[in-house]
Image (cartoon, rainbow, N blue to C red; front, top):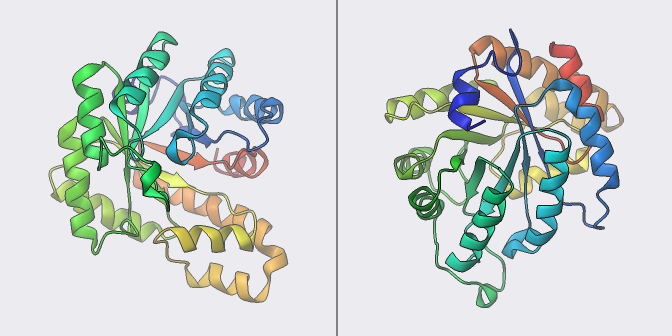
Length: 284
């Protein structure tokens, strides 16, 4: 089922409930058996999508095909990530053929992180909107793109970031999946500004369960994400309580987003089912 169908017909997957989707990534050790077990647990929440990342320079792209097959074998809807940095047109075309032959209907088109050694890269595509247009012109795939409620870390201001989003939408995107955030007011204001820019696509908030202080520090070092005072106080004064606090904090965040009327919730699971499951049990 394509993105436009999923998020315009919420009765299809979760009657009277918000749609949920999950992001996973290829395990570094190459063993997908544990990931299979985690996905089997998450399947009971009837996800609309399971999205799959791959590494910089497409380093795990071949391995990703095996995981996509696993997702499909579990009878779940797969949405692989495409990153254009370091991807040639030939690589993208080959990958598109593979996933279309598997019956996959949706992809998430991203620029991706620029590696330190750019000499190893092919730059047929410089920006995500170029990749979106290239795929849209050649396939029937439904294309998701990224949104940044607090702005991309490389962008000088949020309005410019929304202008870049508009380019991706005009190139053929069908839905927007946001970077994680901890303050819903920032998301609400972002949605308002996106709508004012003439963009009417579904905007799916990215949700990150909180597992550890180190995890939060890593996230905020790589992206523009503000930590609210209540969470900052726990990090500073009660770090051993961070997981329990995080379950409650993110559960309340999700309930507030559902009340706002979001089209779905997209969980960055980090290949674990436990925290995501507890949060979903809390908000059902």
